[in-house]
Structures are given as C-alpha cells and as structure tokens.
Image (cartoon, rainbow, N blue to C red; front, side, top):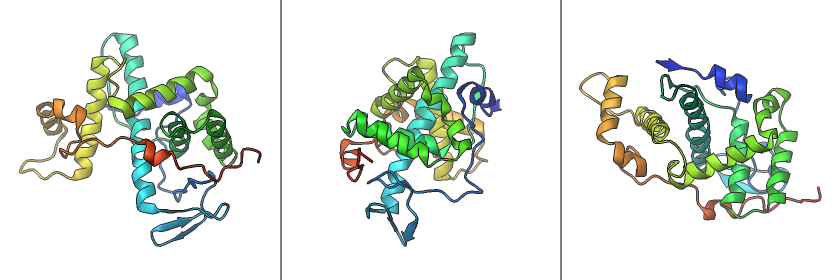
Length: 242
C-alpha cells in the first residue's frame, strides 16, 4: 500500500504533498543566507554579499541535504510512530516531496553540527531564512519552533548523515527507510530490465542487495555524506549584528 503522509502532515505541520512544479526554485546564498536573484549560465550570484556559486555544486550539496530530511527525518519519524502504535510496520509510505524550506533549515543545522559554525550563527541564519519566507512556508516548518522537535530533527539529520540511522533507530525502521531510498534511487537511475520495472521487482532486487545498500548506493558507489569541508566555509558573509 502506498500512502501520502497526510496524517503525519497534520501532526507535524508538514505538507508532504508540497511540490515546486508551479514555482521557480529559489537559490539560497551560502555566504549570507539571502535568496539569490541573479543566475548566469552555471553560476549564481548573490546581489547582497557578492558571493557566487556553481549551480552544479549547489545542486549536489542540496541533494545530500534533501535526502537527509526525506529519509533521515520524515520517513524515520513516520515509521517510528507507526511502530510505536502497532508494534509493526503495516503501511508503506511514498512521499511526494517535502517543503523546500526544510532543506534550508537543515543546511543551517548541518553547518553547525558538521561545519563547526557557532550556535549563534546557526540561529541567525535560521531566523534570516524565516524572515524571507511566505506565511504558508512558515506554517510548513512551524513544528520546529518547539525545542524538543527541533532537537529531534537535528539528531535525526546527523544520524542519517553519519551512518544510516544505525545508532538508536529500530532495525525494522532502518530496513524500510533504506528500502525507500533504494527504490527511489533505482527509479532515478532508470535501470533497464527485460521485464516491466514493477514494485515487486524492485523489492526483490533490493533484498538481494540489502547489506550492500546500507553502506553503498544502489549504483555500487560508496554513499556520499555531507563533509566538514563542504560546510565549514559557508555563512562567511554573515553579519551577526545585522
């Protein structure tokens, strides 16, 4: 059974039906946390602080961040709540994207727990991002105003980035999250098969590669986590007094 997480969205303030189909994706400046308004070819320029970034590098960075939010937090939280309620996983979810604002907040958090940014800087960046959001977007991330929810969000992001939730997550929860990641990536890679690429075929393929998938991606390449090198040089144009 495939179910959009509407119940989860009501409890957590997350609208998982959110898509960017009708909106041009915004680019967050990695120097001052303003939204960039100038793009030329593969380069985005910040009109506020003058920082530039290659769009290919930006996309690669935010793919890692988005995966951490999607699999490390949203899937994990949903399956854990189900496990706590039933003692088993009865419903298999499929997500239709998550609010982009969650990725920006997650990046700010990662810049602290991995990049070494001060907590004052992280808080400043988060507040600056919020000031640039529309009211609907603020509602979608409103659950993070609760300290315990924000701490849990941060912990789950870190654990996913570190080692596929191997610290405290229940094994059954890990199984389903890794399965969802594998299936999503397999579909993205457009693997060719003589038979129709069905869900059952994907699950069968997943089971035969389960152990490899935990430490490696479905392509066989090592899973790439966010690194301190990627995150230690962002927010350098932030003025904490501003």
